[in-house]
Length: 355
Ligand code: COI
Image (cartoon, rainbow, N blue to C red; front, top):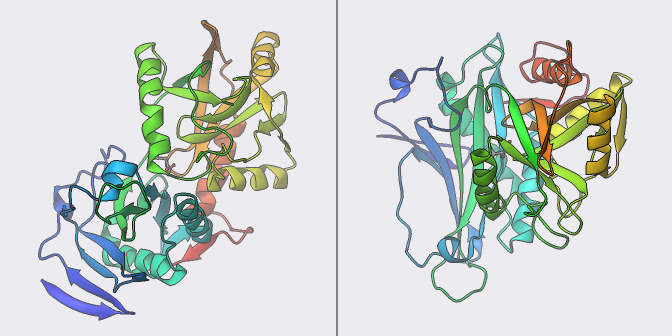
């Protein structure tokens, strides 16, 4: 192994690369990881020396609090390579801020900006050959933090491990996405952790989503826990509805994740003079819109999936198929956004950051 030190990060390079074993044309989301990972531990009340080292499993004490009390948070980000081989991140400060908001809500240590950003940049530079050029090719970045402190007493850990791993990615969903509107299960509740990117928020979705899958649906559209009348998120994404020519999406709240793709789409749509209304959207409006034809589109928005058109929804055992439309707003906005991300269009918003 070859060890160097750059900007305070120790770097231990892998002896061999796995890159030649990867079929970049047939990637399944989140299954392949690059040669290195970034790691920084919080112990004795302070952040220790960060390190980049060969990607590998690691040991944890069986009583580590992450296993028992679920102190675990993460982020989803992407890096892009342009035609000049330059590397770009998309609004990384938004992810950094949200990461520490999640940390605060889960009573975990907050990560200093320099550790987060330098870790990202140096890891991406080291595994740069894994980032392929061309629209559709991205490097999905997964920063995460777990409680490594030991003991099964139910209190916050004193120790944490912050890591970043990288996974080359193409699309998240393939093909059509049919959804089931939640009538009983909830993703989040007022005063809860729905706005945090906490691992448990995703675990709690698995059982109802499995039931939806068995019934022939790909995802669940979550509704508010108190009344199940307001539409909140779609699976792992924020959700937009187009009624006639207006886009609707729910306001962020304690129950809804403040998605970076969500807020970018809102800004882009407004710039295109598309009317965007941010207010609670009722299930009854969706059903009415599907019946009278004013509901034109539903789409999910998130880092992994970018923009994902939803082809139909089921509510109270009735399936409503959306009409197929040419030149959908979902695909127009996705195209504009990915052009900015891949540096194929001018970034007039100032969202892209060169690494
Ligand atoms: C993302 O879109 O980055 C997410 O975090 C969703 C994840 C479950 C893939």
